[in-house]
Length: 152
Image (cartoon, rainbow, N blue to C red; front, side):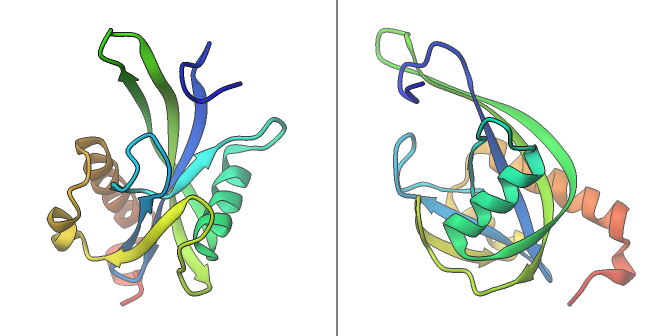
């Protein structure tokens, strides 16, 4: 199925990956929103679970190994062209994940990657949805792991 002007939504999986007190961001290498900073992730393949998709996409885009903690949000990303026709439609399931191993490098669909402290997110001009999901993941992480048990 084509991604541009699809006949139905594409299921995507994004990951809010934490390493100590920093979250992983990726700069998109392809449309839609090429060149913008966002959460890394990609399309789910047939026969693949959400967790398997997140692990595969993060490995492909960044070279990192992660552990999935929980699902934190579902976001509808719908982009229309000048005539109002749906150019892109993604239903993105965002998961909370912890870094397990590896050095982050830009690969596959990512132009660049960065570990960013939540206080510094403004300089990356994230969409409102990405900022909201990062905030939700941060709160969920504290609830699941507990503040005293977070790595420094």
